[in-house]
Structure formats: C-alpha cells, structure tokens
Image (cartoon, rainbow, N blue to C red):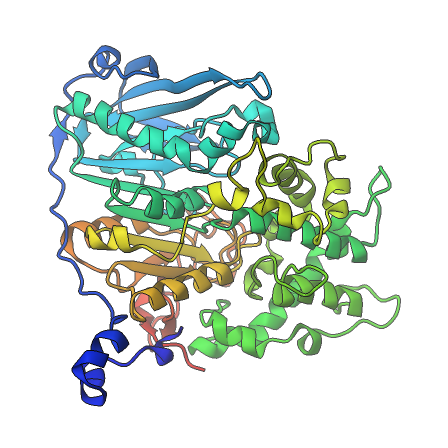
Length: 579
C-alpha cells in the first residue's frame, strides 16, 4: 500500500459511517506514537579479570577476561579506534552432535568499555557466521568513522553456534541450523545482560541490535522474536528471505550460464563471461540517461528508484548487438533476456510462480561488488548454503559448486526450503526468516524503534523485497508505521557498502536519538568516500566531490534537488516521489 492508497482518516470515517461501523472500518489507523524511552545513564567498569567467577552461569564457559588499553582494533583489515575496555571471551552450550559427531558451541566475545554509556549492542555478523568477529558494533554503511564500542556501548559478537572451518556443513546438524537462524541470539542475550550487570553493578538501561546482510537478517528476526529484549533495531541490507534469495542466486547462475561466452578450465560455463564490465557499465549508463534527472538533478545518483523501474526498459533503452558483435556498446537479445529474467521477472518456477523478488535496475550494476555476488557467489556461497543448510533433507550427496547451481531444479528442489522431516523439524523458511515479518506490534507497543537501510544496487538481497516488506508493515499499521519503523534506501550502494554511492553514514546515532529522545529521523546525511578520504571507495566517480553528501530519505520519500550546492546535502530535501 502506498501513501496515496492509505485508508480514510479517522475524521473522514466519522463523517462517512456510523459509530458502530467506525470501529471496524477505522481499526487500522496508525497507532499513536509512544513517548521516548528513558535515556541511558552512564556508568564505569567495576570488574574485569574476575568476571568469570562473578558472572558464572550454567552452560557458559568464560575462557578469558582481560583488560585492553585504548588503541586500535583491526576489523576486516581496517584499524578501528577503541577506548579502554574489558575483553571477555567464551562459549555456551558446548556439545557433540548425535547427527554428525562434530563438536559445537556458541562462541562469543564481549567488549565492555571502562567509560560506559549505559547501553548494550548486539553485533550480528554476516555470511554464514562461524567466526567471532571483533565486537566493535557497526553503525551502518561503508568506511564508518565510529563504532558502537567507541561511543561507549558494551558490545557482543558471536559465531552463531558453529566453527567457520566447517563451511556450510554445519547444516547437517539440526540444532546448529536453529542456532544459526535464531537460537544463538536467544541464548546470548540474557547471558550478555548478566555479564554487563556483573561488570558495571547494573544491567543496561537501553539495548540495541544491529547488523548488515545476514546480520540484517538477524536484526529483522530479533525485531519479532526478541522484541521484549531490545529497544532499537538496526537492519542493513537485510537478507530476511535468505533461503529464497539463495535460490534466486542459483536461478541467476542458470541464466548467466546460458549466455556465457567462455568455459572454465573444467569445461563449465564461465559466468564472468556472460557480461563484461564494459557491458554492465553500458547498462548503468543507460539507466542514468533515463532516470538520473528524475530527482531534479543529473548527478550520477538515481534517487527515485520506483519511477526509474517504470521508465527504464532493458529491451528498448540498451542497443541490441548485430550478430557476432560484442564491443561493450550493445547487448545481444539473449543477454537482455537474461537480465530481464533476473531483474524484472525474478526467479520463477516453470509455472511462472515467483520464488523471490525482482531487483531494481540502478547505477551500481557496474560495480565490482555486484559482479562478485552475481557471478562468483552462486557456485560457492549459495550452492553450499542451499545444499547443506536451507534444503530438507540436505542435498549433501550432490556434486557441489557450479554443477550444483546449474542442476538445481526450480520445480523439484526449490520447495525443499519449506520442507521438514523426522530429523529437521523446522524448515529453513521457519528458522531463518522472521515469523510474521510485518507484525512488529510487540516492538511498537513497548516503545521500541526500528531503522532499516538497503542499497538499491544490492546484487544479492533485493531492495525491492525490503520495500515490499515495509509496505506490509505500513498496511499492518493503518497505512503509516513511521512512528516506530522507517526504511531508508541508499541509492547506488551495493551490498552493505560500495558502488557509486554516498555510503558512509551513522544510522546508530539516529536510532538512539529516536528511541531515547523521540527525535524521529527525517533524513540521515550520507557522505561519499572519494580519493583522499580515510577509507576510500574506488567506485566513487571522479567527477564527484570526494566528500559529496546527500540526505538518505525515509521511504517512499526521495532526495530531491532544491537548489544551491550540488555536492552538499543542503541542496536537497526529502520529498514525496514524482510520478
């Protein structure tokens, strides 16, 4: 439901119908906004090296508790500043699986700053988890200038119940599947709050949950399953339909294989040869020609994504190659059809039933991140995840890699993500996705808040899927959920970062201000990371200011040029989209 299709307001209902009917017809009106929750109070670390004894819990083993001076913590090859803190490491629920005889445990670390802001942050990690990433706490976007830990949060990070060395084979164990999907969060949250209470002499005043990609999925799941435990939810590029998205990746591999022009050394289709970088840049350039100025300024950013999908036509707007021509200036008819099948029609079975969402055509389709997810990931990440984790029973006996992706049957195999059996009692669609995802009533009713952001050029989790989810949330709240949940598309951004985008932003501070001060984010300022910035993004166009800024706008509003400096957010305003 869009804003033009909202139900009648209460006043219009009262004039149109009787009181008895009014209660039925207007029951779906937007709920009143809750007052902000009390602000967190700062505190000081009281214990560290003896926390193993102080915070002892059944089934929890603290393997170390050490004092760490202020300095740098390296995350993903980037050094992040961190204040003096206590680092606690451990594991929960260690066991031997009766199914595969492997050892499992929920590994974790917590970083507890000496100068505490009274808040707890659950850092949900990406991919297949499996690694305890340093507990820093992401604030959103690429090349962040700060972190939750630096802001004074106590932060936890986890491997979600399995070792990364197993790869996707942990999916052979039913409990490991559940831990990965939702149970590790359920187990770790009370443990972490107990540890905080023993470290500071009291529990956290406010609790936040955040992550991107699979971490965004974790956040979406927590918004429903753990609504009573968290005051603010930050979900980035959320793969909340991850099993479906993984199946769509295999569908995409089949489309690309059909137009691949080269073979691998093993004699298989080379997916990278389906579209050259020059050919995808051609598509991006044609999208910009049709859609760039829809927001009032041709600046290399398509802000009005919805209008662009109605305007851009891959068949009409991209030149068709003559037979035998491949010079980067045109696409063949089969290439166009392959892109249309993935972007517009979406993954489907032979009956034409959609298996996942469409994707928006956007300027970021020429990026290296886009290519990696579309052409390199299906035979590696996606084939393994589908084969071992998302299908019931697991398809572990099949050849893996590209043969698995190309042999996956959308009629016979895709329904396995919704299947159960005598060993696996929950399907992937049960343990991986938020139950009743649009029902955020529990979070809303306790005064919680939720911010979701998503790059419109995300190649693996579609921002169309997230927009459709938010429309359902709106509909479930009388047509307007903005009093407690807002969705911010990030034009041009690839998966969680990168692409020709202003991808550096701080969503966490905006969320805290909303939860604790009642300051609903009317926009969030985002910056480009051009040459010379501390963590540059190589895909920022050379004709942009290296530190271009733009407002990110709550859906369905778009950043519209109003005049003035074309490189600064001050020249734009968030407005309803023009048709």
